[in-house]
Length: 90
Image 1 (cartoon, rainbow, N blue to C red):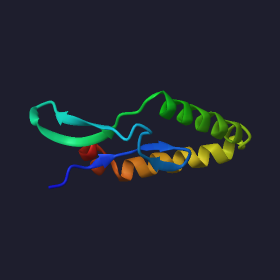
Image 2: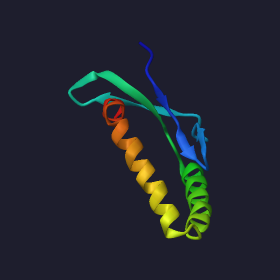
Image 3: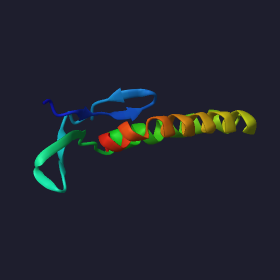
């Protein structure tokens, strides 16, 4: 079975780390089982994520409160609907 590789979500896109490196995350109950490979992010990746988040916040703050509420309610629905697969993947 292939080990899943997880990327960084920055500015609306899934991206590998700028270093190109990953690290293994092991099951704490069985340290011989790798449950996923994650990006070994560095300062450049963090800077890109913070810049993207700051830009998104400027748009979000101008979104009317009722619309923000609709969006957050939809997120809650999706999280509830997919909680089993999310828990398994975590």
